[in-house]
Length: 149
Image 1 (tube, rainbow, N blue to C red):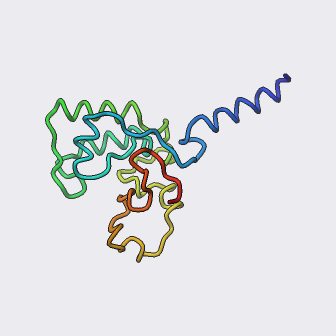
Image 2: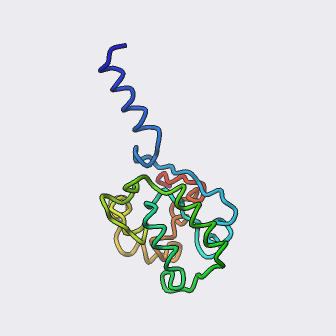
């Protein structure tokens, strides 16, 4: 196989190996029981791949005012969640955030906004109510499947 063909194959493998890079509708699901229990008790436990590690760090540092709620946790639980999020976060730039951005909301990332250009009435639908209610439209969101349901 020639060098050019090898290079093309390698690029294709990299682009399809990760949904973060390829832009596919799948992300690795959350499997950590602590994250599922603690985060999932108030909202869907969002897949760490949606934000870069620096965003998850900022979110974990602000749990006393977590989007208007006190989501404070014991230090050991907070540390376990922080470690899981950091280890599984989106790549260096995050797959949904570009450059040095540190988004605090998945719904504020360029990719989310590009994929969710809906009239305001969609967000007010009683089945949806908030942009962060992924399962309202993506029935398998908790499994990391975000195909257009």
